[in-house]
Length: 217
Image (cartoon, rainbow, N blue to C red; front, side):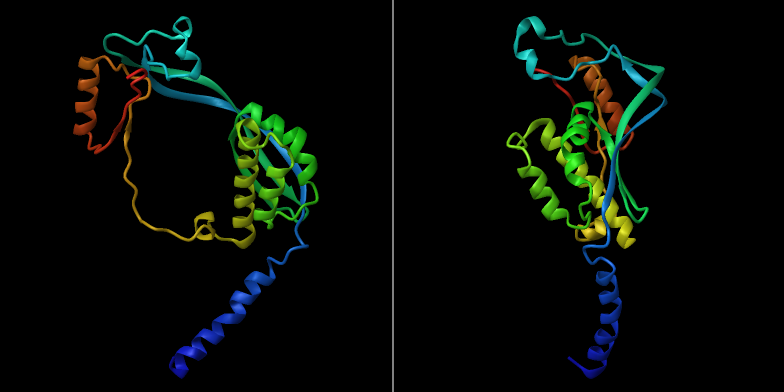
């Protein structure tokens, strides 16, 4: 290493040291775990009639909806929406947000994880995840795991705000500058003539990929 390069590297060390000094554990604490209800209206165009998504219960013929026959058309509708969000508040006025979350997961957050999280260091993400996972023997799947995931995402948001960097920087930085999108066909008829027409339309609009919900194959 040349002397000039070494000196330039050495000059950068105090800046990095100050960054991690600001993140020393023991200073920041979770003060509140809140479930927020957000309400509003959404006006969108939806395919009608709408093709259903497959549910595990549909293995029983008596509970299996019939697939749509024929074409679907777009209908403009205004719907009232109600969603739940998780907010972690700290003793330094810094918040971490995540959502929306399912109501079932929100119950786990509020009744089981909230008492455990109060007073904890939000910068200790790895330790908190492991401790939440070990807090309940039923945490390996289902709504408990979804609740842990919600808290973990809110903690990532909080750490990004604390260090004043986007979360993707904390996760290793960007790997690409552009991302391809696909055309979602959720709700559209899978009847072959109607599906072929919709697929051709998406190709004309420039979509290279499509996602179809073919129900039972």
